[in-house]
Amino acid sequence: MKVLSNKIENIVEEQLYGLQSSNSDIEVRFDPNFIIRKKSKNKTKVILISGGGSGHEPLHTGFVGYGMLDGACPGGVFSSPSPIQIFECAKKLNNGCGIIFIVKNYAGDIMNFQMATEMLSLEGIKSQHLVVDDDIATAIGAPTNQRRGIAATVIVEKIIGAAAELNYSFEECLALGKKIITGARSFGVALSACTMYTTGESNFKLEENKIELGVGIHGESGIEKVDLMPVDEITDVLITKILSDKDYKRTFNSWSFKANKWIGNSLISKKFKENDEFIILVNGLGGTPLSELYLVYRKLNEICKKKHIIIKRNLIGSYATSLDTKGFSISLIKSDDEIIKLWDKKVKTIGLNW
Amino acid sequence: MNIEVIKANHIIKWFIEAAKSMNANKEYLTQLDSDIGDADHGFNMVRGFNKVYNRTNEFLLQENLGILTKDIAMTLLSSIGGAAGPLYGSFFLEFSKKLDKKTTLNLSEFSEVFELGTIAVEHRGNATFGDKTLIDVLVPASEALKKAVKNKKTLAEGINLMAKEAELGMNATIPLIAKKGRASYLGVRSVGYKDPGAASCYFLLLALKETMTQL
Image (cartoon, rainbow over all chains, first blue to last red; front, side, top):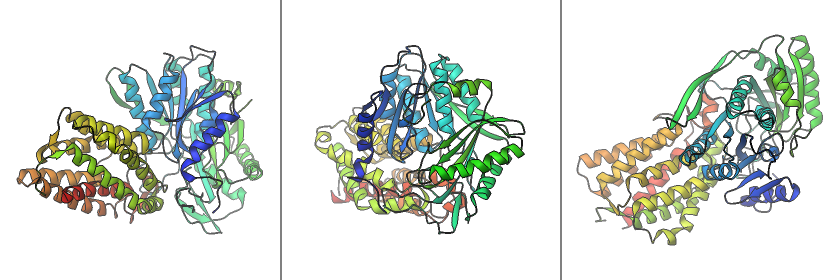
């Protein structure tokens, strides 16, 4: 398959050079690679940093700016950033008000961010994790405590970003983050797998008349292959899975500065119910045109009305992508007045701007 | 081979051998990872081990095993990426913590740091034996070393036994359901595939055996 490249090994760096020269509000550092906001006027805000593999743009590099992230650490394509990148980015941005890492729940991301947190702790710099695990798709036999972090991460970054801008304290930002994370559920579907740069081929085979349910954002297989259906039926399958997902308990690890170790607490996502209010995200995976996402939203809106699910705000577009994957995910993020107020606040980044 | 202790230059030769092996097996590791992961393990391992290889001349000046293994660990940590970076990084960082100011390692000492490294990897990955990860290679390899020490084997014999058990451990990942890492999301669909991390770990340990036989 064809991709735009000079040398595959240089894809991430060349992309960062492009980003740097296109946006004067951000600064790109190389070796180790990270992106930071140019001087924020607010000296007493909590610092927000995210990061993960490249190939999900605009997540996360495109969300650095006013009202969202202070820094982002891009790893290789679909490969998490190193602790050194995260450590250096955090040290550069540290203002003494505390650093929050927004991490998607993947083994690699968790390990690298945890190592960075431990390294920062040794230098007396306070940091903490908010782990997003919105993907309810889990296969038969898969461990149940390991939901992946996918598109809802965008919403988490926007809302905490607004809160930090309003000078919410470190603890207030973390509490708000946990509230959003436990109220977020997503489910994705792929019509075709993405082209992996490493092999030049699709990562899994999907016949012309098949779709893959429960895909994440790394070109990996999902949980079930089914026949292609009209978009209305696919939308119905996805939203039904989300609405019928039961209470979900996971262990949420926090770094104890005092005890110098990770401490796990259980955190529960309650099942969604009638008259709950939501921000809804219809997220394209990179290879699906916006026009088709509106077909999804048409049906989604209809189903939600029928089922008394209240959509307070919506976001439709490709925000957490998986290279050129054809497909989309639906995310429901439970909202309340505080969350909606923060959602509506000004944001000025490459990926979100209002 | 008649040497009874591992010195800094042996460790460097081990990493040169490992870099060769990762390059030779790049496509193979990537293939394994495309079966049950995201097709980048070969590339990541090559990136990390080439980085170490490129610093060979600088490393040759270092006789202190603590400093040498720390430099190697930090290089791997900053360049492999993904989950493999912190796992291999943690393994060798544990070596460095125990080897400060040491310039030689006999079989018993090697077995000791190897076991501590394995425990560090288990902690970092929050995984145990049987989860279909590189730990399925490290644990039997560590046991083999301990047994060799107990049975008063030579350094060469011990490392040979270690490599043999590592290979068995790698192949034993095939029928397992993945419990950790990206393959775990596939659940039962991960059965029937060799774990790419177990494979790269075997290549790393095999490189040590090859290094010692060449001496």
